[in-house]
Image (cartoon, rainbow, N blue to C red):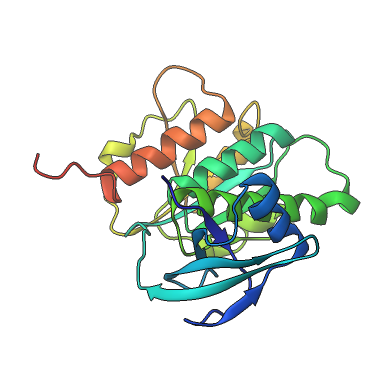
Length: 246
């Protein structure tokens, strides 16, 4: 039986007891249906994980006892950043979830010309939702370190910051460059557009900022498919998607 994993945003120490928040207790007891004596794994995003046991459950709260610390990391050796133009909510949520599963270390949400209209008063709420998706994806995939989520900014503002540049590529349907031809060490940044992709002007702006335009074949991919494909290729060529013994 697969042991459940839970992110806890607080300091953790072996043999300590933790009273869970109302939401976390509800998740363990009513969603996962765990009972007193059940074991699970806790992590706080600072590295490593703890085995824990559910010791108290009642109508108001739940309590865990930490057992042992395990210095386990499942991070890729590739420092992979996804710079993603904001797409429709369901597509953006899916992209972020899969990006975390594919080992990104940083996610940069951008407003591009083809991003759907965004109410500035709701941006913070969207960022909070994305952070919850990141945590959930880490719980599911076994990651003990949370990818960094940048605050929303415009594409032009982001590209104007030259300190971001190191092995940067932009996905462009008309590009002649291929991922397989790139010479990457251990760090790469991938820029992908929203529905409809980046405009020609935005792609050119990225190229002038130091990005290399790269294509993914002759077919047009949806934004969420393009992100998964590109991140998978990066992990395949330079990351931890390896086949041992071959």
